[in-house]
Length: 88
Image (cartoon, rainbow, N blue to C red; front, side, top):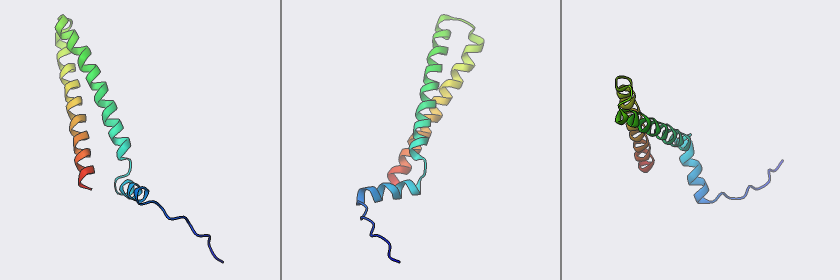
């Protein structure tokens, strides 16, 4: 029994599929890093305004620091992902 001939795949599509096979879900991870970083940035802005207004400084300061830490972590993870992408 003979199989029908498959059309050849374009080199661009082959390269994209090969890259996806090497690092699955890279796009999803980058999207999650961006989303969580944006959320942390919004939270940091809210807690910064509370600090500037002088409202509940004892609770707002640790929360502000946490939000800044989340943003820094997401930026570093995104940059790490970018470096890994450029290496491969």
